Image: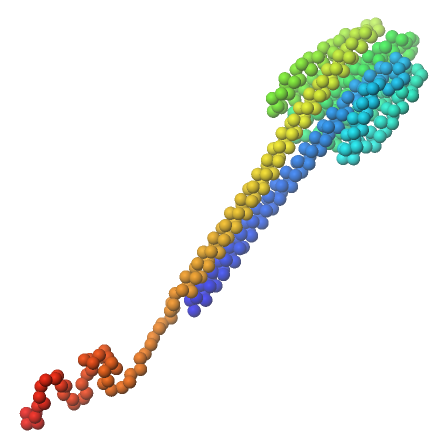
Length: 391
């Protein structure tokens, strides 16, 4: 009876061990999956931002190339500059890879068509200038689309957020405004009357736009330096930012706001200095953003591996605990089975063969343990039998 009870207890322990294992393993698996999904989502976001940085790297030289094309066209050069051809080819390459993901395919196709038509636009300077302004504005719109669709403008790190604002918003506007400032100065000098007054109004607007954009750009770079964990950002920005500031100071002197006509030669020199400084600054900023994103990607990869390792260790420990519990249960069951007669009584009765036969005596069974019969006189051996007279 006892063996059956112990067996049921052993099976109950085994069942409880399985249930506890499941209760521990399911929450652990659920937590692991949630961590893995969040990690995968963050890795996808980082990859999208890296794609955006690569697109911006190809797009940035196009702004300066279009400024060069605008100046050449206003001077009567009809052919497309080589810098524009090279920049368009680079952007075309990245758009073929990331255009669908970043939502730039249709915008770029339209912009590319308009760029190809620029050499065919001839006539009055105002007509040529307006055509180039339209193309430049469309280019800035692509910058906005890339930074938004790549989620760079929603990056959680302050340094990356300020850097992307500089390179994808403020710098294209600054380069475009400075190039227009220089070209408008030439147009003001060559015009007269109402046309000249209108051009001077446009010139003043672009000059103010340059000042505002440069102020925002400088503040954003300072914020990025203050917030960054990069050891190279501050040092890499110093020399290029100094050159950029010198170009801005020269542009302000050449603008000659409130005075007579702007100083064309000073503005042309300032434009060249600014374009060179902004191109170098753009390269530094994009490289820093890429490095920061690479560091984040490496951290996420490490966390993913760590999650797999911890989950694997948890499974191994749970499996070992289950095996140990079942082994202990089997040992308990085996011990219960090997105990004979537990909970029962073993009673055996030997049958008597009768009389006083030796070996069958209830007094011990030996030949010397037999009791004498009723009325018998035991014979102790060696003595003679008494006579009746003596009895």
